[in-house]
Image 1 (cartoon, rainbow, N blue to C red):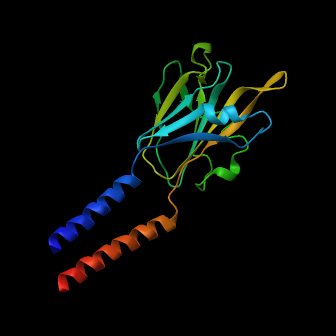
Image 2 (cartoon, rainbow, N blue to C red; image 1 turned 45 degrees about the horizontal axis):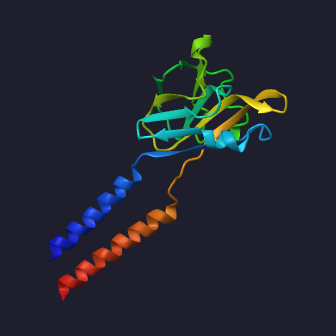
Image 3 (cartoon, rainbow, N blue to C red; image 1 turned 90 degrees about the vertical axis):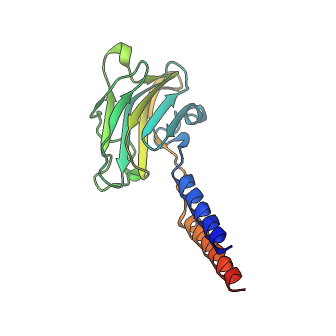
Amino acid sequence: MIHSAFKAIALAAATLIGISAHADSGSFACISNAASCTAAADNDISWAYDGSTFTITNGGPSTWFIGQVYFDFASATPVSFAGGVGTAFHSGASPAALPGGAAYTIGAAGWASSWGANASPSLHGINGGESASWTFASTDYVAGIHLQGVPLGTATTGASLIAITAVPEPETYALMLAGLGAMAFMARRRRRA
C-alpha cells in the first residue's frame, strides 16, 4: 500500500514536470505605434514554441511583412534561423534593437539576438500567409518583431510587437509542492495506521 502511494506521488510529480515543459503558443502585443497597430495585427500574427523551434506565422494581409525579429534570453543562448517558405533572414537586424522594446528585455545586454530579412524582393521577410522558424533551447525568453506595412490612415507605417508568454507564477509551484506534501503526509499516516 505504501509502495502504491509513493508510486502515485511520483506519477503526479512527473506529470506536473511534463506539463511545465509542454509546447506553448500565443499572439503578439503592440508596444509602439499603437495607433497604427490594430487589434487585427495582435490576432493575426502568432507564434508557437515547442521547446526547440520558435515559429512566427503572419496570418495578416499580403501588405503586412515582418522585416526584423528579435530575441532576448535570461542567459546566453545560441539562436539559428531554421527556415520558412518564401522567407530568408540573416543574423544582425538593422536596427539592432527592437524599436520601443527596451523595457521588455530580460538579459543584461538587451536584445541578444536580432535577425533581418534578406533584401531580395522574393525573400522579403515574413509576408502575409507565410511563416518562419528559429531554433534555440530556452524557456526564459522574450521575442519581438517589427511589423511593417500596417495601415495608418492613407499611409502605412511600422509597429513593434512582443510575444505574450504564459509564465507560471511562483504561487503555482508553491501550491504544487503543498499538494505533493499533503499526499506524502496522507500516505505516511495510512502506513502507521
